[in-house]
Length: 133
Image 1 (tube, helix red, strand yellow):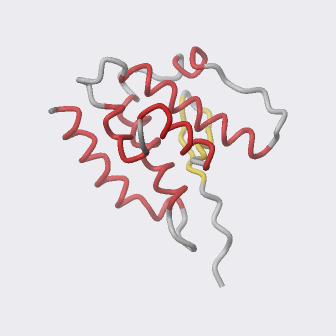
Image 2 (image 1 turned 90 degrees about the horizontal axis):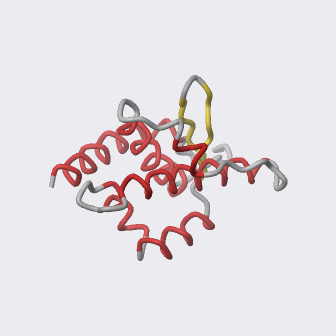
C-alpha cells in the first residue's frame, strides 16, 4: 500500500525551510502568465527580459500555495520579501526547486518528492541549456 503523496517540495533559503506546492491553482496561473506549463523553462531563459521577475513571481506563488494549503488564513509573502531570499549564489538552486516542485506535484502515486532527484538533475541540465542559448 502506498502512502498518500504530499506533492510538496522543500527548499532551504537563508537557513529556513520553505515548502513549495505546485497546485492546480499554480498550474492555472502559470498557464495564464506563460501560455502553458510547458513554457516553464522559458521563464528562466536569460533572453527573457522578465526572467528575474518571473523567478520571484514563481517562487512567491509556490511558497504561498504551500502556506495556504496548511492554513487558509496564512500570512502570505510578497514578491519583494521573497526577492530578498534570492541572490545570484542560490538562483540556480531556486530554479531547480521550482522545477522539482513541478515534478513533485505531477509525479505518480508512491513517488516522493525526493525520488525525483534524478529528474531534477535532468531538468537542471535542460534549464542550463536554455539559459545558455
